[in-house]
Length: 426
Image (tube, rainbow, N blue to C red; front, side, top):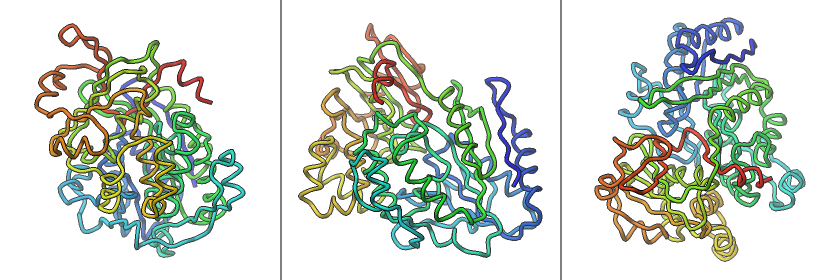
């Protein structure tokens, strides 16, 4: 396989012509391909530039039978409208739906002693390695995993094998990896390449899927004030080193260090990308290390209409709420439904400020009673948007009626951290 790593010469990023030429070179190195499975992210990862890349791959493989299976994880299946928006021109009938509950096959197990060692004994149980059955279909000549390397709350830096083991994985790996990260400490991992969760994924990659015909396509992206995506680096191949190089680029472009903690932050969630608190809580995850004690985080969420992407997870979130590490640990110990849904338990921890700062949600399609029932403050969206107008505010500090407000137009693009907080969390 032809491994490639490209970086952009300017802030404008790599051109689509450069990206397509690199894709062609990698595909040509593999010889004739009759049947290909492409695994891009879903619409909650719009900034990965995976939509255009998937369309390019389709054009470059005119003679191959191509299936496309978005790496949903536990997210809602993509609608035809969403597919048409993210992958314009591609036939909807070629898209497969990943069912994390029913379409998975166990292919191995990460042993308990390994999990215990990498987690400093915070988790002492084995983790089943499960994949969607289609990835194991021997009729595929090539499996192309496309995704963005960016700071991430569960694994440290997103993508590479995470796109398979979580995006196309099953209950055990999804739930256990999320809870492992929560137990180890989100702030100790975000923005870092090597973490306990990444070690688990690396173990699974080396022991259970190294013989599968996988090619990774990894992007590092930024956006400008016009919300245009710029690809700063592109990696193509299988080697772990490609992920390491991508992490360095992402840390350069997607880590935003601040000289002082933020007392008031406003984060906007694009409605086509953020429809639930499950995904929308990136506004909390990615801001936690930037917020001052006793600060205030306001989340403008015009598209948010429920808690969980999965109906079962939605019920658990509504039942237990966002209550922080200590309370979640107590609830897991006492409640079998939460014990069986450790991914939700992790999510409840991640979505809490641990009492350090207040969180106010301004959703477009949820009631005051719903929002307050899970321990957030509530503000009507119209009121919040009138006071903190996303059409007027710019990323960074703004003066809003004499008030100093830090604005983030899309929390999926990076990690914001007060320098001292980030470097203390080791």
